[in-house]
Image (cartoon, rainbow, N blue to C red; front, side):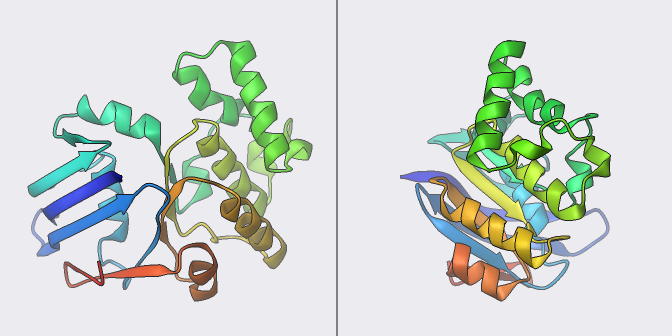
Length: 216
């Protein structure tokens, strides 16, 4: 079953040549893909288009069986697709870890009690309960990265988009992240410059270069 499908996506930033020049991609249930390519190739742009954060100049975005065109079409997509940002500080903005993880479920209409129950479940699942009441901005880079994943998993997404998830990770936290990701059932689209990490999480690779996707 196709979860996300892009057909002939074209996109250019104003005054620049096309970043995406006819990109087609399908991510299926349970599939794990690595998206590689040089810096500036448009990998993060592709993620934003999938979520409706940027609109393509041409082409079609289909998610969960429905074509998505307008802003309202993407509200459901953003509930069902979790994006782990390249920079953890862009994703964490509440005073404590528990509040950051509860933010998404509260926005989905969960009660405070329900949201805090989700916080505890996610932290137990990820073996991060020791961070529950920590002040977010005082966490180490590796701890922040693991907490960003917790905030996304609290939303119970069906797809994970991971944008350089090993940024700021030491070897111990990278091993922990590998263990967590390999235990998850979600489909994954991974962007990472770390070839060993790609091989262990999403060995099927496609390459974005010169506006085109190769190996899809």
